[in-house]
Image 1 (cartoon, rainbow over the protein chains, first blue to last red):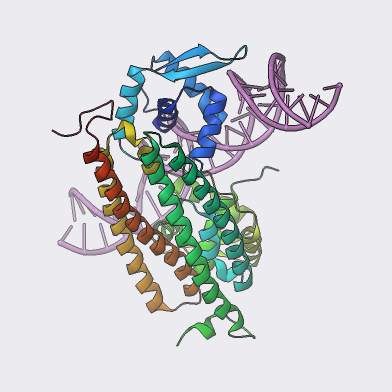
Image 2: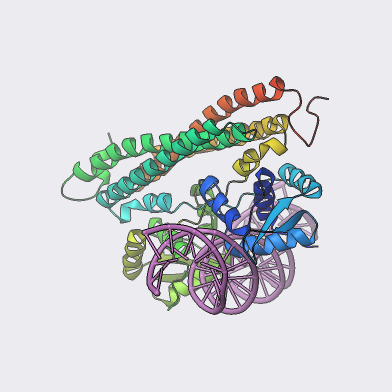
Length: 192
Length: 192
DNA sequence: CCGGCCATGTAATGTGTTACATGATTTA
DNA sequence: TAAATCATGTAACACATTACATGGCCGG
């Protein structure tokens, strides 16, 4: 028995523990609600759904339309979910394209790095707005899962805010690097 | 012409733009210096090195030991690096195991979520210490790449600090949840 | 002389996305 | 009636890690 992609199972069982859904809705829910820290594609979801049903952890009922199914978690599934939630957390190693570019930013020049910061600011502000909107919505709904949802949203918001602070500070650093010495290497201006 | 894994090329060319290295050193350097936002394995590095050499972007010189090589970037490689640095940033979708577990934390119970926060605090503090050490080292060395290295370290530090703040705030929330309502979670009785 | 590190390389395997194929239903 | 959205499913591909196989060098 291979160790299996338990993370997708965790996301699927977790989502179904909140409410029964079709595969399509599942994907949309994960995308919209968990989007800032998780993602699943159809290519993962549908096979996982079939497997979990074969394992007796979820059940399929016919949906509104012909051919569609609504899946709901059962007791065995809830047990499995709790197991998975207690299992070891194995995050895959980080890969941040922005930081990789900035790290080698000397080859790019300070000016272009500043442009990267502009993009980062824009996308971060957009995400922050999104998170605040979701936060307000969850607070309004007041479901039993709400407090846990809010925990994750809170970290997202704090991370966005930290990123925006960092953008401002970095802008200052890079501007000095860019304008400080008109003629040649960027190293000259920075040192005391 | 397939789009090719340009991100590994970017990391490898970037690292070689700082100084010539063997494949082994490359992996260690990426692991230690870029570790908080990037990772590469041998299985990626060695094939990439051969490919880049075949494409004429880097050059191999014999190393200290028989069979070992030291790779250095050439002008074509630097040109390619600049292209890659300007290319579109396609981060793979995020996957944060901690947040996934907290999101479905109702199935786990507040107490176990608090344990997750403890682990997070410990690992975050460790990473923060690591980052501060690297920061001090880079500041001491004062290389031309230094200011760019410091940019990425700075974001790492700010993110860690935001995470620690979040841990404290979340602890308060979960403690209220744990003690406040006697019978909410379906899986387990909370207090032994 | 042995354990640990330096060093290279490949095969197996897992994981996940993208693209495609298909078709029903709602909405403009 | 055309477009968008709901809905399911699979095959091909890309990407990366892990494990293994191999061997030289150095310090204790």
